[in-house]
Image (tube, rainbow, N blue to C red; front, side, top):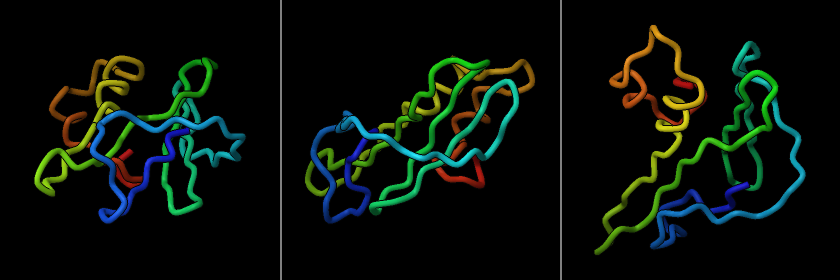
Length: 105
């Protein structure tokens, strides 16, 4: 799991997730061909997914300081959804507008 801090006071200067092996209990948010999971705890909110019984993967989202206190975002979760979960009725524009929050995902 990515254990990168989420509060602006604690952000790193690196866009890559800070991985740590953990055993988690995930809540199921949506279950069908693609399953969406949710974890909240230790001041972190993380989303995970699997497609057709594949291993569970984390949707990657990380805020970080790019320079001079400017906050940038690693939105790899959008590419993951487009590549792994895409269906013919969803456009790239729709995926690009998805926020990393329960109500959007």
